[in-house]
Structure formats: C-alpha cells, structure tokens
Length: 310
Ligand SMILES: Nc1ncnc2c1ncn2[C@@H]1O[C@H](COP(=O)(O)OP(=O)(O)OP(=O)(O)O)[C@@H](O)[C@H]1O
Ligand SMILES: [Mg+2]
Image (cartoon, rainbow, N blue to C red; front, top):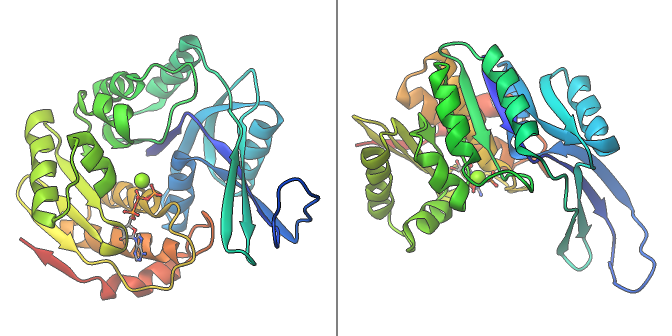
C-alpha cells in the first residue's frame, strides 16, 4: 500500500475576476474549489494511474470536513485526524484581462506534538513491511522542523520505503534519516547546497553527494520543462521534458512523485519508471490548476519520452 502524508493541507479556491482591483467591489465570473496539499495531490494522481493509496494528515474545522468529504467522494481512502482550528483556504484570484494571479492564503491550524504523535502512532499500526510512505509539503505551525526526520525514522523502522519531497530545513532534516527516495527540483537542490546548480553535471554531482552522505538509494531531480535526472546506485538517466501546451505547472512535481511511488510498488524497470513519471508530469502540466490528468493522456505520452541512459 502507498500512504501519502499531508500535514498541512489546504482548500484551494480559484476564482476568476476580470479587472480585479483593490478598494472596490469585485465580481467573480467563475470559481472552483479543490482539496489541496502536496500529499493529497499525490493521492489524486495515484488514483488516475489506477493505483491505490491512503491519504493521511491533519484537518480542522468546516474546511477540513469539506476536504475530507471531497476526497471521499473521489473514492480515495483516507486517514485524517481532526484538530481545533480551521484548515486554511488558499484563495487564488485569476484575472484573465490583466493576466495577473493573486494569492491570499489563510494561516491554517496549529498542531501540538500530541496531535502529530497520535497520527504517527495510528499510521505505524497500519503500515506494513514493503509499503511506501510519501512525506511531502510544508508543516503546520507547531510542528517541529525535524518532523520529517523523526517520521522517516519511524516508517523505516516499520519496514516502509519513504519518499520525501520537501524544501529548505524540512528537506535538510529529513535527509538525516536517509529516506529511500528524494525528489528535489533544481531550485530546492540548489538551496540545499547554498549555490545555484545549473548544468546537469553539477546537479548530478550534488545528487550523488546526497546519496553518498545520507545513504539514499534514489534521487530524482526535476527540472521543470527541461525534464529530470534520475540517479540510482548503478545508473543515471536524463529525461528530456515533453513539449506540451502548458495549462498549469502547479503540482507537476507531485505528479512525478505519484508516478514514482506507483512504479516502485509495481516493481517497474528504471527506464519504464522514467517514462511513466515524465509522461505523468507533462500530462498534468496540460491540465489547469491542480486537476489530475487522465491515464489515457499519460499513456499517449509514454512512448514520446526521450531519455538518455548513462
Ligand atoms: N513546462 C513543462 N513542460 C513539460 N513538462 C513539464 C513542464 N513542467 C514540468 N514538467 C514535468 O513535470 C516534472 C516535474 O516538474 P517540476 O520540476 O516543475 O516539479 P516541482 O518544481 O517539484 O513542482 P511542484 O512542487 O509545483 O509540484 C518535470 O520533471 C517534467 O517532466
Ligand atoms: Mg515540488
């Protein structure tokens, strides 16, 4: 089983307002709400890939209930703990006339170590040897910054393979527990190393350093429209980005993580893994917002993936 953990989810509310202006009345011409948060996005994409996952995390208030209801309506299996307070709504104002995007983000809930401990305990009771646990995204207020280190250690102790997708301190801390796979993008990897890594050689060297120093088996470095680098103990694969019409690049990385988890669970070869995750990332770029692409679209892109094995 694949578990995705979203400790800091959000309800993404996207509204369209033509000629959006401050200090005046604005009228919405179209709107949609989607349950969001990186782990939740991963679960949605796994479902499109005909895989199964359990989406876990922390929710609060009526917004939390709305997210849970939406996930259940999609047919996703869930394991969320509720806390005091209100899960954040992230409002995105899209102005098609002025071509602007304005984000207004709520603060979200504050968690206690007890809340985190209770969720971890329940998940550890459920996780079996060989399961995959995806830890991704930001942490809510109140969560210690080494949460991904302690959670990675705990899930590894239960025999699970941990995939970590985080940024900044959260990534740096998580690495100390040697997750099975990490998927930084080039910017996150550069921040981790404190310098701009530009060429594929520089990025590969940095990725290999992580593998050596932190005993990480697999590193996938995503490069937006330029594709990705896949590093394993005995191979390096460079995948070119697919040329697709861009709807929204938000969540492209989450789609790659979903494909990597599914590929791992299905025991796919490295080459097939690269094809599936590159196609899944590109197919999701073709969709608007964080909508997950259909498997048929992904399948059409798979043979078009260009990769070089080193
Ligand atoms: N413009 C694009 N055209 C084609 N493919 C893309 C494009 N942007 C992203 N992709 C695909 O999606 C993958 C992941 O993208 P990216 O590196 O932007 O992830 P990310 O920065 O982690 O995204 P996020 O965290 O917002 O989900 C890329 O490796 C690539 O295969
Ligand atoms: Mg990302």
